[in-house]
Amino acid sequence: MNINIENLVSISEANQNFSKVARLADEKGTVIILKNNAPRYVLLDYNLFRQNAAGEAGADEASARMLTTFIEAFEKLAK
Image (cartoon, rainbow, N blue to C red; front, side, top):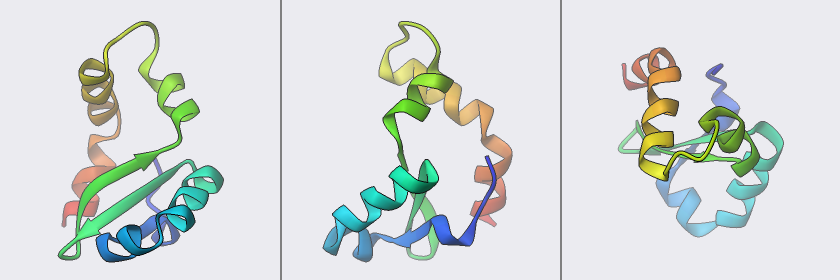
């Protein structure tokens, strides 16, 4: 997962203009939503999620797998 500044949005922008943020996720695949200037949420295109989740795993298991896969990017964002 590449960290791109264009994929970062504030939680207030996501709240006020969710359709714009959803379109960004459609274009880029992933949007990182910041709360107090720190990464807090990930909005992920569903097809990308399915590709990375593999198989019939439940949402919790798939989310854990995604976190494990992209942990380095999330750690860089947290700094």
